Structures are given as C-alpha cells and as structure tokens.
Length: 222
Image (cartoon, rainbow, N blue to C red; front, side, top):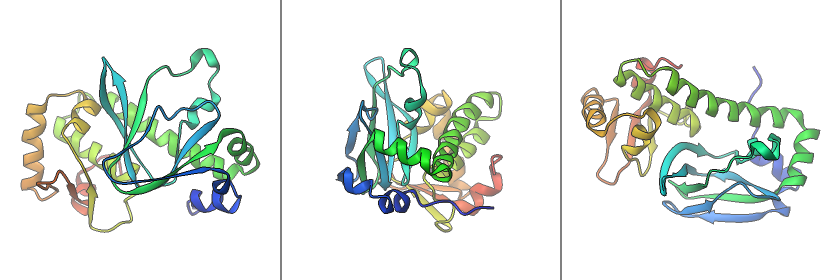
C-alpha cells in the first residue's frame, strides 16, 4: 500500500505556495466566506475547520476538514449550468494556516502529477461517501449512527494516528443534529451514555475528547 503524499510538501516543492497568498488564522475564526473563487482555490495546509452552508438565512454545519485539503476542487469539473449556488464559509476550530492558490497553476500542476491529483480526489470521495453513508443508514439505531459519525470526524480531521485520545474543539450538538437530521433531545441522552462508557468526554470549554480505541471497537465503518 502506497504511503499518503504530503500535499503541503508537494505544492511547496513545486513553488505553488510561493505564488499564493498565505492566511494564518486563530481558532474560532471565519477563515473564508464563500471559498469557491473564480480564479483561485483555498488550500488548508494546517489546522482543523468546519464547513457551513447557508440555508434559510442561517449557517448550518456541513462537515469537518483538516490539513492537506483543497476546498472547492470539485467545482473545477462541473459545467457552469451545474455550478453550486450555495453559500459556504469555513470557520477554524484550531489555529492554522491556509493559502489562496491560483486555480490555473494548481490545475496544471495536478494534471502533470497524477499521484497527487489521485490522492486529492480520493480524499474528496471519502467526504462524499460519508455524506451518503449517513443518509443510507437512517434506519440504524441512533446510537450506532452517532458512533459512526464520530469516527467519520476522526478520519476527516486526519487524527487516526494521533494517539489514544483525540480532540474536536468547539464541538456542539449541531455537528450531529444537522449531519444525521435528528433531534437534540435524543442526542443529549446518547452522548451522556457514551460518556458513561468512557468513549467520549465533553469539557466545559466545548472540547470533545474521544477515546479512539473504544470508539473504533464500536464503529461499523472501520
């Protein structure tokens, strides 16, 4: 099995980051509103962030992203008539760095380096597979769906190899209610149960701490 490519190193060695605008950010900060640009794309090189979509004049949680992610890459392959009309924003959960990369230079590089391109498409596919999985498993017990969603968060934030205890800062129940389309009342009960089982802990400052070995034992997606 091939080792994952470090996208930051690949883009840096190609000189693409030197041609890009660097955006350092603090935690709990709106990094970018509407990350789909006409002439550039947003590369998250370091940190964890949440993507939100504007629905009914309110921002709604969509997914988590982390280092080595290029936002909006999927829109480079859509005909204009199928272009996404939704409003997006990305808000940081940790400190980190992003780059606004010229789209044409990036696409030229990716076409010339298929292994890098393949990994980015694979990461994008995983994100969409999780969204599909969450809809397909609607009839599964809610507790199992929440466990699997928490495992998705671990994978999407690239923390599988980070140790026994993993963290999702600024966690709210909305991460679960919008992802699984379920009520807050039921979620509170299940999160309390997972806390009693020592699978998770939610601190006073809204940090979700996950005991990864326990979570992995009960998840159906690994």
